[in-house]
Length: 312
Image (cartoon, rainbow, N blue to C red; front, side):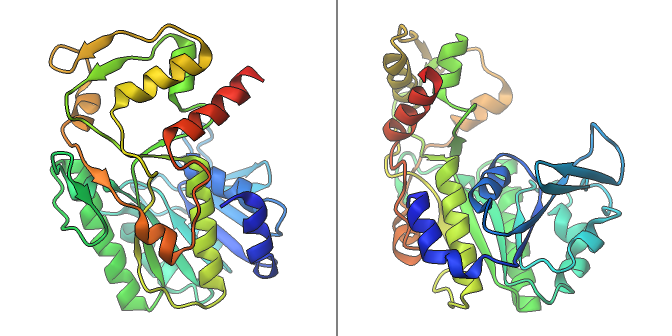
Protein backbone atom coordinates (compact mmCIF):
# COMPACT_ATOMS: atom_id res chain seq x y z
CA UNK A 1 0.00 0.00 0.00
CA UNK A 2 1.58 3.24 -1.04
CA UNK A 3 1.11 6.32 1.07
CA UNK A 4 -1.10 8.00 -1.52
CA UNK A 5 -3.64 5.17 -1.43
CA UNK A 6 -3.55 5.17 2.35
CA UNK A 7 -4.39 8.88 2.54
CA UNK A 8 -7.26 8.71 0.05
CA UNK A 9 -8.91 5.64 1.55
CA UNK A 10 -8.92 6.85 5.14
CA UNK A 11 -8.75 10.66 5.09
CA UNK A 12 -12.32 11.19 6.30
CA UNK A 13 -11.66 9.61 9.72
CA UNK A 14 -8.39 11.25 10.70
CA UNK A 15 -9.42 14.54 12.21
CA UNK A 16 -9.69 14.67 15.98
CA UNK A 17 -8.33 11.22 16.84
CA UNK A 18 -5.64 10.62 19.43
CA UNK A 19 -2.95 7.94 19.38
CA UNK A 20 -1.19 6.89 22.59
CA UNK A 21 1.98 4.82 22.17
CA UNK A 22 3.30 2.77 25.04
CA UNK A 23 6.91 2.84 23.90
CA UNK A 24 7.85 5.43 21.30
CA UNK A 25 10.56 3.61 19.39
CA UNK A 26 11.34 2.79 15.76
CA UNK A 27 7.91 1.42 14.76
CA UNK A 28 5.83 3.94 16.69
CA UNK A 29 7.86 6.81 15.24
CA UNK A 30 7.23 5.49 11.72
CA UNK A 31 3.50 5.26 12.38
CA UNK A 32 3.54 8.82 13.70
CA UNK A 33 5.39 9.93 10.56
CA UNK A 34 2.70 8.38 8.36
CA UNK A 35 -0.07 10.04 10.36
CA UNK A 36 1.64 13.45 10.23
CA UNK A 37 -0.50 16.07 8.57
CA UNK A 38 -3.78 14.31 9.36
CA UNK A 39 -4.63 16.25 12.53
CA UNK A 40 -3.72 13.48 14.95
CA UNK A 41 -2.78 14.14 18.53
CA UNK A 42 0.05 11.73 19.39
CA UNK A 43 1.48 10.91 22.81
CA UNK A 44 4.24 8.42 23.46
CA UNK A 45 6.16 7.07 26.42
CA UNK A 46 9.89 6.91 26.86
CA UNK A 47 11.89 5.40 29.68
CA UNK A 48 13.22 8.84 30.51
CA UNK A 49 16.81 7.73 30.94
CA UNK A 50 18.12 11.01 29.60
CA UNK A 51 15.72 13.44 31.22
CA UNK A 52 14.44 11.75 34.33
CA UNK A 53 11.44 14.06 34.74
CA UNK A 54 7.96 12.60 34.98
CA UNK A 55 6.89 14.55 31.92
CA UNK A 56 9.60 14.47 29.28
CA UNK A 57 8.06 17.10 27.05
CA UNK A 58 7.73 17.44 23.28
CA UNK A 59 9.70 15.87 20.44
CA UNK A 60 8.86 17.20 17.00
CA UNK A 61 5.16 17.58 17.72
CA UNK A 62 4.91 14.30 19.68
CA UNK A 63 4.17 14.70 23.38
CA UNK A 64 6.32 12.35 25.45
CA UNK A 65 5.83 11.16 29.00
CA UNK A 66 7.88 8.87 31.19
CA UNK A 67 7.10 5.21 31.75
CA UNK A 68 10.02 2.99 32.71
CA UNK A 69 7.91 -0.15 33.11
CA UNK A 70 8.97 -0.92 36.68
CA UNK A 71 6.35 1.35 38.26
CA UNK A 72 3.34 3.35 37.18
CA UNK A 73 4.08 6.38 35.03
CA UNK A 74 3.08 9.45 37.04
CA UNK A 75 1.53 11.22 34.05
CA UNK A 76 0.38 8.24 31.99
CA UNK A 77 -3.18 8.12 33.30
CA UNK A 78 -3.72 11.78 32.52
CA UNK A 79 -2.01 11.52 29.14
CA UNK A 80 -4.29 8.64 28.14
CA UNK A 81 -7.37 10.87 28.46
CA UNK A 82 -9.17 11.10 25.14
CA UNK A 83 -7.06 8.42 23.43
CA UNK A 84 -8.92 6.66 20.62
CA UNK A 85 -6.12 4.32 19.53
CA UNK A 86 -3.37 2.73 21.62
CA UNK A 87 -0.19 1.08 20.35
CA UNK A 88 1.87 -1.13 22.68
CA UNK A 89 5.46 -1.89 21.67
CA UNK A 90 7.09 -2.39 25.08
CA UNK A 91 8.52 -5.90 25.54
CA UNK A 92 7.24 -7.99 28.44
CA UNK A 93 9.39 -8.71 31.47
CA UNK A 94 9.62 -11.70 33.76
CA UNK A 95 6.52 -10.48 35.63
CA UNK A 96 4.41 -10.01 32.52
CA UNK A 97 3.42 -7.11 30.32
CA UNK A 98 4.39 -3.83 32.05
CA UNK A 99 1.49 -1.87 30.58
CA UNK A 100 -1.06 -4.29 31.98
CA UNK A 101 0.83 -4.56 35.25
CA UNK A 102 0.75 -0.82 35.92
CA UNK A 103 -1.91 0.76 33.72
CA UNK A 104 -4.61 -1.82 32.97
CA UNK A 105 -7.18 0.08 35.03
CA UNK A 106 -6.29 3.40 33.38
CA UNK A 107 -6.66 1.83 29.94
CA UNK A 108 -9.87 0.00 30.83
CA UNK A 109 -11.34 3.33 31.93
CA UNK A 110 -10.65 5.05 28.60
CA UNK A 111 -14.11 5.06 27.08
CA UNK A 112 -12.94 6.56 23.77
CA UNK A 113 -10.47 3.79 22.90
CA UNK A 114 -11.55 2.10 19.65
CA UNK A 115 -8.44 0.00 19.07
CA UNK A 116 -5.41 -1.43 20.86
CA UNK A 117 -2.54 -2.79 18.79
CA UNK A 118 0.08 -5.03 20.39
CA UNK A 119 3.41 -5.57 18.62
CA UNK A 120 4.53 -9.15 19.17
CA UNK A 121 6.96 -11.44 17.36
CA UNK A 122 6.93 -14.44 15.05
CA UNK A 123 9.18 -15.98 17.71
CA UNK A 124 6.00 -17.26 19.38
CA UNK A 125 5.88 -20.01 16.73
CA UNK A 126 9.26 -21.38 17.78
CA UNK A 127 11.43 -23.43 15.43
CA UNK A 128 9.82 -25.29 12.54
CA UNK A 129 13.02 -26.37 10.80
CA UNK A 130 12.26 -24.06 7.90
CA UNK A 131 8.63 -25.15 7.60
CA UNK A 132 5.79 -22.75 6.88
CA UNK A 133 3.56 -21.24 9.56
CA UNK A 134 0.54 -18.96 9.53
CA UNK A 135 -1.75 -17.50 12.18
CA UNK A 136 -3.53 -20.84 12.62
CA UNK A 137 -0.27 -22.64 13.46
CA UNK A 138 0.26 -23.67 17.08
CA UNK A 139 2.18 -21.43 19.45
CA UNK A 140 5.37 -23.21 20.48
CA UNK A 141 8.01 -20.69 21.62
CA UNK A 142 11.43 -22.17 22.17
CA UNK A 143 13.10 -19.21 23.88
CA UNK A 144 12.38 -17.27 27.04
CA UNK A 145 11.73 -14.15 24.93
CA UNK A 146 9.22 -16.08 22.85
CA UNK A 147 7.48 -17.51 25.90
CA UNK A 148 7.13 -14.05 27.44
CA UNK A 149 5.65 -12.72 24.20
CA UNK A 150 3.19 -15.59 23.97
CA UNK A 151 2.09 -14.93 27.54
CA UNK A 152 1.75 -11.21 26.84
CA UNK A 153 -0.39 -11.94 23.79
CA UNK A 154 -2.69 -14.06 25.96
CA UNK A 155 -2.85 -11.32 28.60
CA UNK A 156 -3.82 -8.71 26.02
CA UNK A 157 -6.43 -10.94 24.43
CA UNK A 158 -7.92 -11.60 27.86
CA UNK A 159 -7.92 -7.85 28.55
CA UNK A 160 -9.85 -7.28 25.35
CA UNK A 161 -12.41 -9.92 26.25
CA UNK A 162 -12.76 -8.57 29.78
CA UNK A 163 -13.17 -4.92 28.79
CA UNK A 164 -14.84 -5.27 25.40
CA UNK A 165 -12.04 -3.28 23.76
CA UNK A 166 -10.74 -4.26 20.32
CA UNK A 167 -7.26 -5.75 20.69
CA UNK A 168 -5.22 -6.81 17.65
CA UNK A 169 -1.90 -8.66 17.72
CA UNK A 170 0.77 -7.96 15.10
CA UNK A 171 3.54 -10.57 14.94
CA UNK A 172 6.73 -9.09 13.51
CA UNK A 173 9.92 -10.65 12.14
CA UNK A 174 13.26 -8.87 11.83
CA UNK A 175 12.63 -5.17 11.21
CA UNK A 176 14.75 -3.08 8.87
CA UNK A 177 14.57 0.39 7.41
CA UNK A 178 16.45 3.70 7.37
CA UNK A 179 19.49 3.45 9.63
CA UNK A 180 18.83 -0.22 10.42
CA UNK A 181 19.61 -2.43 7.47
CA UNK A 182 22.29 -4.40 5.69
CA UNK A 183 22.98 -1.26 3.66
CA UNK A 184 24.15 0.45 6.86
CA UNK A 185 26.30 -2.44 8.10
CA UNK A 186 27.92 -2.93 4.70
CA UNK A 187 28.76 0.79 4.50
CA UNK A 188 30.11 0.72 8.05
CA UNK A 189 32.27 -2.32 7.33
CA UNK A 190 30.56 -4.37 10.06
CA UNK A 191 28.42 -6.65 7.87
CA UNK A 192 28.92 -10.38 8.35
CA UNK A 193 27.66 -13.32 6.33
CA UNK A 194 27.08 -15.97 8.97
CA UNK A 195 26.03 -19.15 7.18
CA UNK A 196 23.94 -21.89 8.76
CA UNK A 197 22.68 -24.35 6.14
CA UNK A 198 18.90 -24.33 5.87
CA UNK A 199 18.51 -21.14 7.91
CA UNK A 200 15.87 -18.70 6.68
CA UNK A 201 14.25 -15.60 8.16
CA UNK A 202 11.38 -13.33 7.19
CA UNK A 203 11.79 -9.57 7.40
CA UNK A 204 9.65 -6.48 7.19
CA UNK A 205 10.41 -2.88 6.27
CA UNK A 206 9.36 -0.44 8.97
CA UNK A 207 7.31 1.53 6.42
CA UNK A 208 5.14 -1.53 5.82
CA UNK A 209 4.63 -1.90 9.57
CA UNK A 210 3.49 1.72 9.78
CA UNK A 211 1.08 1.29 6.85
CA UNK A 212 -0.34 -1.91 8.33
CA UNK A 213 -0.99 -0.30 11.70
CA UNK A 214 -2.53 2.76 10.09
CA UNK A 215 -4.84 0.57 8.04
CA UNK A 216 -5.93 -1.44 11.09
CA UNK A 217 -6.57 1.79 12.99
CA UNK A 218 -8.64 3.12 10.10
CA UNK A 219 -10.82 0.03 9.98
CA UNK A 220 -11.41 0.27 13.72
CA UNK A 221 -12.37 3.93 13.46
CA UNK A 222 -14.81 3.06 10.69
CA UNK A 223 -16.42 0.52 13.02
CA UNK A 224 -15.72 -2.49 10.80
CA UNK A 225 -15.79 -5.69 12.83
CA UNK A 226 -12.57 -7.66 12.37
CA UNK A 227 -12.74 -11.25 11.18
CA UNK A 228 -9.30 -11.81 12.72
CA UNK A 229 -7.33 -10.27 15.57
CA UNK A 230 -3.86 -11.78 14.96
CA UNK A 231 -1.71 -10.93 11.95
CA UNK A 232 1.72 -11.93 10.69
CA UNK A 233 3.28 -8.72 9.39
CA UNK A 234 6.08 -10.12 7.25
CA UNK A 235 7.45 -9.86 3.75
CA UNK A 236 6.75 -12.39 0.99
CA UNK A 237 10.12 -14.11 0.85
CA UNK A 238 11.88 -15.78 3.77
CA UNK A 239 15.55 -15.90 2.82
CA UNK A 240 18.97 -16.88 4.19
CA UNK A 241 20.55 -13.93 6.02
CA UNK A 242 23.80 -14.21 4.08
CA UNK A 243 21.91 -13.60 0.83
CA UNK A 244 20.59 -10.30 2.14
CA UNK A 245 24.08 -9.07 3.05
CA UNK A 246 25.46 -10.14 -0.33
CA UNK A 247 22.67 -8.29 -2.16
CA UNK A 248 23.31 -5.12 -0.14
CA UNK A 249 27.04 -5.27 -0.92
CA UNK A 250 26.38 -5.74 -4.62
CA UNK A 251 23.97 -2.79 -4.66
CA UNK A 252 26.62 -0.55 -3.16
CA UNK A 253 29.47 -1.94 -5.26
CA UNK A 254 31.27 -3.20 -2.16
CA UNK A 255 33.06 -6.56 -1.86
CA UNK A 256 30.75 -9.30 -0.61
CA UNK A 257 31.88 -10.30 2.91
CA UNK A 258 33.19 -13.85 3.13
CA UNK A 259 31.14 -16.71 4.54
CA UNK A 260 31.48 -17.37 8.25
CA UNK A 261 30.27 -20.81 9.36
CA UNK A 262 27.72 -20.49 12.14
CA UNK A 263 29.47 -23.11 14.26
CA UNK A 264 32.68 -21.08 14.53
CA UNK A 265 31.40 -17.51 14.14
CA UNK A 266 32.01 -15.22 17.13
CA UNK A 267 28.55 -14.07 18.19
CA UNK A 268 26.81 -12.80 21.28
CA UNK A 269 24.40 -15.11 23.05
CA UNK A 270 21.54 -12.94 21.80
CA UNK A 271 22.77 -13.06 18.21
CA UNK A 272 23.30 -16.81 18.34
CA UNK A 273 19.82 -17.36 19.72
CA UNK A 274 18.26 -15.90 16.58
CA UNK A 275 19.84 -18.72 14.59
CA UNK A 276 18.24 -21.28 16.89
CA UNK A 277 14.95 -20.97 15.01
CA UNK A 278 14.22 -21.26 11.30
CA UNK A 279 10.77 -20.80 9.83
CA UNK A 280 8.88 -19.49 6.83
CA UNK A 281 5.97 -17.22 7.71
CA UNK A 282 2.90 -16.66 5.54
CA UNK A 283 1.25 -13.23 5.37
CA UNK A 284 -1.93 -14.14 3.44
CA UNK A 285 -4.25 -12.96 6.21
CA UNK A 286 -2.54 -9.56 6.30
CA UNK A 287 -3.26 -9.03 2.62
CA UNK A 288 -6.78 -10.43 2.56
CA UNK A 289 -8.25 -9.13 5.82
CA UNK A 290 -6.51 -5.75 6.01
CA UNK A 291 -6.24 -5.30 2.23
CA UNK A 292 -2.54 -4.55 2.51
CA UNK A 293 -0.25 -4.38 -0.50
CA UNK A 294 3.33 -4.40 0.74
CA UNK A 295 5.41 -1.53 -0.50
CA UNK A 296 8.51 -3.71 -0.05
CA UNK A 297 7.42 -7.33 -0.65
CA UNK A 298 10.97 -8.69 -0.43
CA UNK A 299 14.29 -7.51 0.92
CA UNK A 300 15.36 -6.62 -2.64
CA UNK A 301 12.85 -3.81 -3.05
CA UNK A 302 13.56 -2.57 0.45
CA UNK A 303 17.33 -2.56 0.09
CA UNK A 304 17.18 -0.95 -3.35
CA UNK A 305 15.19 1.95 -1.89
CA UNK A 306 17.57 2.29 1.06
CA UNK A 307 20.63 2.13 -1.19
CA UNK A 308 19.18 4.87 -3.38
CA UNK A 309 18.68 7.04 -0.30
CA UNK A 310 22.19 6.30 0.93
CA UNK A 311 23.76 7.17 -2.41
CA UNK A 312 21.45 10.07 -3.25
